Image (cartoon, rainbow, N blue to C red; front, side, top):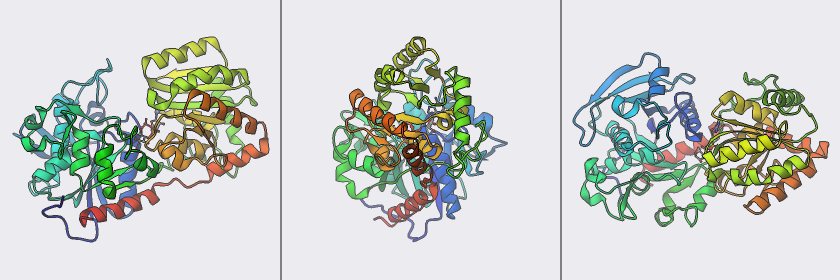
Length: 486
Ligand code: ADP
Ligand code: GLC
């Protein structure tokens, strides 16, 4: 597959970063962190990287005086919309906001209502986002700013490389997989309803087991594919983590790169974090003890300095292995430990956590909801951080944990395997199961009892560099290869 035309420059100048979430405007998970930090890091390297984001209610409410820069009328299959230009509140990164109130201004979250049910018109909503991303990257753009490359993220922008392909590939495109479990599957008739040619609906196209998959479209038509860690890039070329896409990914292996996410080291810095009652650092770690005592008091846990405190901040889903944590919680309590969980998601997991709180008052705390400040205070107050994900494309919380001296206990998968070194800066499960988690927790507790060895392990994590600059340079190299048709 070759582009008919592409920018011939060796040097990448302009990049359009299309995404369905970016913090602080709208966030459901790590994609939002990446979508704000990576464009900012690319801008530091001299790239004019701009965001394209849907105009959700939350986004419009937070943007300061956005300017209307274009109107889109009569795009096949979509309602009329406008394009606004604003700036990201923290970094000032320019952000194009796709204003289509009937699609995006809703009471619930970005993908589903408060009832947890996906919006019935998600194909149109994110079809339009993809369509506009492609339009802005081609000769028919109404803007005087032209991207050399379109960077798409997850299924919500997956149709964009298909639209670009059928427009003659006027710009290079990259598709980044943040999580292969979400594939954007819709009925086949949406293909033509969204303005794509019927011949695109085939195995060598966007057809996926009889349905239309937005993600598959991106994986098939983009010039390059990336995912967010080297290990996940290998894992998804096979079953089971390929989740049905392994064949396509394996055939495009020479176009697939794993680039480890960074973390926002300004936001996540225990020596300047305004969410914490007390600052600390690798050189002066003693403030962590006060953070722990304050956290225990705030969460209604016994204020016990010697009790090993296990933290969890997570979407409460099967992916994250929360059921294993629930199973081993009595063992942790039995060994004198404590557990502090913050998360929201699966109702059965929420209920199981509430039961644990009732069974072990003063020892288990579960905050059901989304709370950014508390997520920082848990990282700062916890001695250990549990993240036994069944799969984890990258994972950010284990990196926050390393930086905050909350020693991570993780499964040997994806980005967890690429960031946590067993017995050096954390603990890696030998076996991905509740039993494997328990065995690893026992190992961790044994080391916790040895104060000197523990401090050594904490410091190994706290001093590791997870800044975005290294990853941004890798993205830049890959962009240049994509634009050069390599
Ligand atoms: P994923 O994107 O799969 O959920 P990541 O580890 O990449 O996993 O990113 C999750 C992000 O969302 C982190 O920044 C984490 O701190 C945050 N987060 C998850 N749940 C909550 C919550 N309940 N409250 C606050 N922050 C949360
Ligand atoms: C996804 C993945 C997570 C990754 C994040 C950002 O939500 O589940 O592992 O860190 O995207 O890339």
